[in-house]
Amino acid sequence: MTTVLERPWSNRQLAELGKAIRAGREAPKGVPEYEEVMLWYSELLTPVQQRIQNTDWSALGLGNVQGFELTSRVKTQSTLRDKLNRYPSQKLQTIRDIAGVRFEADMTLSQQNAIVLAMLGLFHDSSEGRVIDLRENDQHGYRAVHVEFRFGPPTHARVELQVRTLLQGKWANLYETAADLFGREIRYAEAGDLLGGRDIVEMLKELSRDRIATIEELLDRTVQLERSYVNMGDISILPLEIQEQVGWVVDRLQAIRENVGHRKDRLRVSIENMTDVLKQATGSRRGDAQE
Image (cartoon, rainbow, N blue to C red; front, side, top):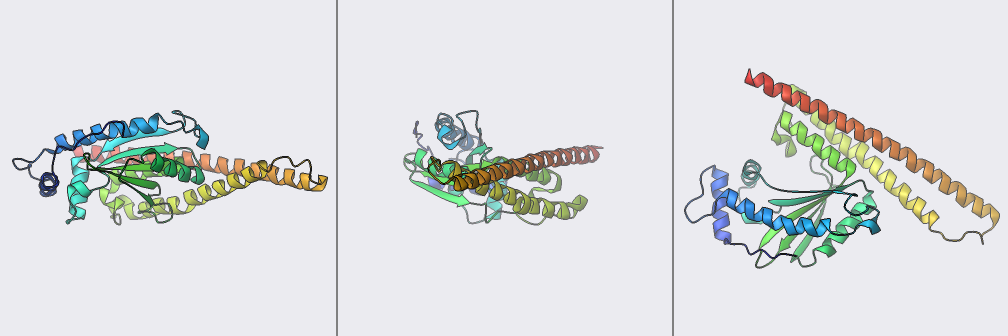
């Protein structure tokens, strides 16, 4: 990494902090506070994010800085407590997504694969880079590709990189909004019956697994086929009949790509509208609770 940060606490100290967070009590003497540890993780994310930000991604068709959205975050104490309670045997220092960077772009699945491979090379100084592909085997509808980086001594820390397409990111935001309305449990288990939550959550999962996945796969295959024909080189040496057939195929593939692109845009707008509706419902519910 550009800046090497030395972790100032031992595994035992972080494990004790994890126990305190899990139990909802203050950290014991000689153990760092949650805020202190998260500040260190935030500092760790800075060089990670800078390295990604300063990379020229134009070779992958994403442009440089303008072609993608890059954000970072550390886990809040409440979400960290939820995770520690869900996995009672897990120690705080072994949680892979305490610190995370999110890379999101309007890209195809093949470009997403290329980004992941590039990230592995970009952080070659990581002691371990593990790819977790959630596109085929989603988590309650959530689809993306995650890369877990484990930085060795003296850093001794993990950073999770989330790589999402535009639709994967829009859906994730929609589901987070649904979690605000129906409860955070929907991210890990079935939704309750509050406000018809179960049916809505199942519909959102199907939206990701069916419509979004289908459009992304169709667009990716079409772009790859179109590219293969366009890159055939000089076809003027081929018989005129073959040239015409190639031209017809290219025209058809372009038309299909444009049609799928329009469908993707309409789906994006629908997801954004659904997110707004759920946000309004959440606001109304909170208002009713305060009366």
